[in-house]
Length: 262
Image 1 (tube, one colour):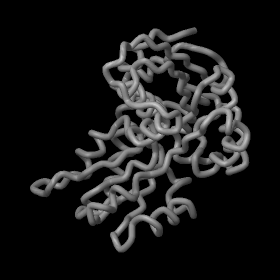
Image 2: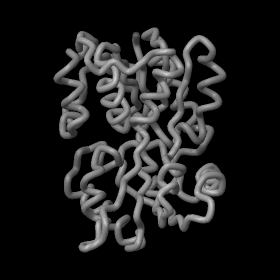
Image 3: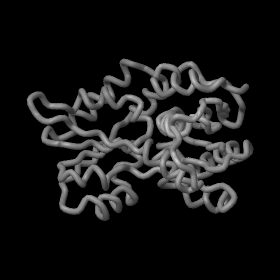
């Protein structure tokens, strides 16, 4: 079994690591677009063109399924990618975990890129799944880029700015960009008021990994022999896993378990 994941950059690492934990025997293809980052400021049409190119680069390696491990690309390009690749390759999008976050009763904050914050897509999810729960949309300019570069100081600055916009009574934070899951503990520390119950963070990596297996009719087999391969494609070029990816536990997990194919 081979599962491909695509994103503008390292946001796919969290979902890839989730797939690896569920099925260590699955071959992985990681297709990203460092030449075109960031995708957030692009127009929807331009972003769709970039995302489709990244999807095609992944599809060239013959995966059984493709995960769009990017909230922004799922908003703007999911339908286009599905039209081109399905039914031959099932395509799984990434949806912010607003429904499970709201199930706890709130209040809830949604951290997302400026392009996603306030979008009709996100507002629709809030309307459909948050009910009467108080929801605050928090734009996080520069955070995804800082995570991509593994720039510790820039990450701290961007997290601090977003935390200052997050109400102190928030009980759950939705990580509405896949890059943010790589620095989840730093986000938790920034939004956790002293003396109050822990703030719960809701990412999407585990859910999309599980959905990919369901679409393929496969079951989680976490004890399977880790004999899989990792293929990395950067803006269409086959490569090794970039050094910056190894700044994160998810990247190190993938590198340790799977020899990178060049």
